[in-house]
Length: 120
Length: 106
Image (cartoon, rainbow over all chains, first blue to last red; front, side, top):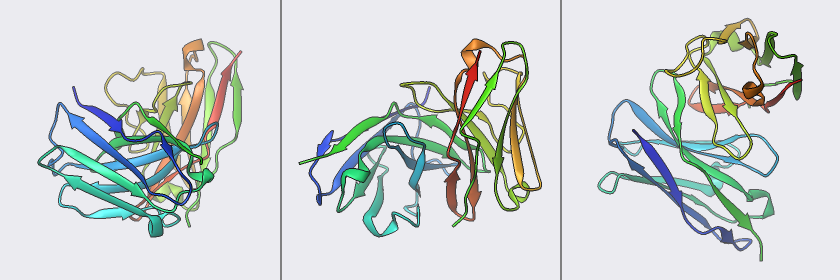
């Protein structure tokens, strides 16, 4: 059974960079059939797609966040990562990593999510 | 940028049919999917490619997509179906979520 697990600091100071890693187990991140994505959800609000990455390293970002986001992949560790720079309180959210299967299937496996709070 | 619009809330009586809509410009020309999210849990994919159900999703969940509107229909709604529901589509290589609909079963 595929599992995804987010890890990283739960508290980040304003203007600093938020860094999270998603570790995939029970399957290979190098699959040509899948993309790997980050989605966030501010407390009490809806889902927002941050971006996705293919095993080859090709990336796709939300235009509204593109200037601050870097998503990378490490196939040797079966992990992919998120960096969001210049954070503010508005970036406080539960951050999810998820698998997106090719062919417009959607995000079919999700991590449990991790709350990141931006505060001094 | 592409936008998907959902009603904030929908109410349904147990055993009745619930319909949740998702509107977007020429949405029927795209693929839509739907997620269910219960409090404190991660979203779960319940419909993909407009009409298909992933393994393990009950048959009472169905979907359609035509014109500017995709619809998630829950037949014989049960108390366990009370949750937030999100539609999602692709605009070229960009993933777009709707704002979410809170389904209340009362």
